[in-house]
Amino acid sequence: MRIALASDHAGFDYKERIAVLLRTLGHDVEDFGTNSAEAVDYPQFIRPAAEAVARGDADRGIVLGGSGNGEAIVANKVRGIRCALCWSVESARLSRQHNDANVCSLGQRLIPLETALEIVRVWLETPFEGGRHARRIAQIESHG
Image (cartoon, rainbow, N blue to C red):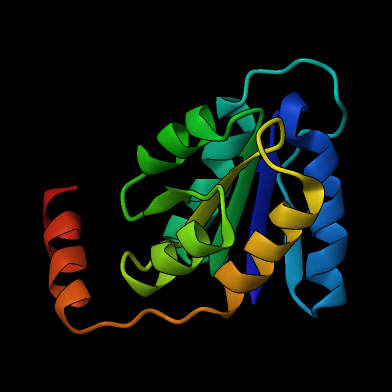
């Protein structure tokens, strides 16, 4: 799978660890930055990653920040993106099963690293259930 990865300074450390995990699992990673823990404005990094997913240049995206909220908001401004803020393995699983989330947002300051890595694993492995959920996704896309 091709994964677009991006963070601001507050998510940089987890982004680097997640990149290693993704490559270890055999995924292709395009890192949109940032490239250090120096303060930056997150939309400059998150929007290009979300746009890559929307264009089909990446299959999914993972974005990170301190809380993940701002990053999810930016990603969801891009037409065709369904970015879920994931804070637990169950929230990640449901974001895929029910919402067909194509971008996952994580908050480095809110969850332990091991939880973040497990969220990524589960989020990547969980399929969309379709069925009644597909009808709802179609409604989201038609009004986006």
